[in-house]
Length: 292
Image 1: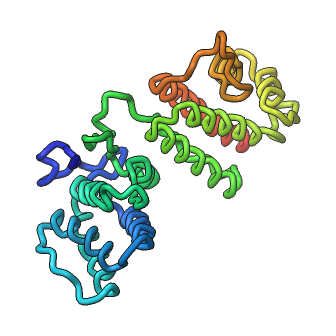
Image 2 (image 1 turned 45 degrees about the vertical axis):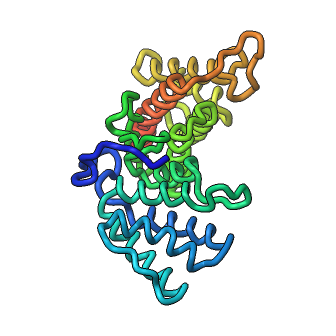
């Protein structure tokens, strides 16, 4: 079934906001064309390029004319993909519809499916998600958007910054794919990882020496009694314990089949938002302690 969405987007896509909504990013185009190259290994290369090129031509308002060779077909595919990318919804529609139509009826022929396309959209923060048969605008969705996390302070090592951002992106991608428990597990891992940044930090007369999450948090609380940091760390510990417990989230030690509570989409987004909020606060605190 062809992809359906707000008809006004064909003329004017939503403005950019938390996500990229207007034009499809160049890096995302490259990922989509890379997937088409994989599809082309299943048959005649030019025929595959012509198939996808035809949909991109339609999206960009051009007439589809067969290229003179496979090489020119690939060049023309890139050209019309970039033309279609000036309007994100039209590009996504073209890529999705072309993938759905390719090899229809042949069980041994495969083209990118919904999860793969949504994965590209999430990876590049494109503001749409395919929920067949509709294309949904992520910023306008009923569910609350993920809490924005402040940039990690410069006192964290550059490699650590990369790890943090990669994990945040991975968590968001898992949420967009409906894999809530894994998204929460990724967020919990990130919370434990950030806690290790406090090891060796001066807290007045003492230095944080703990190795594991609970040890580090305990030392930080002892050195910050009665402060906002103390209260936040109490909430962090409670959330961490609940998510780790088999009768709570069950993301670390397995789920208690008799008394455990399965994490649903709403709970997963809530837990990820809470963790990200705490991360934002803790990273600022880490910077403040480092300056002190």
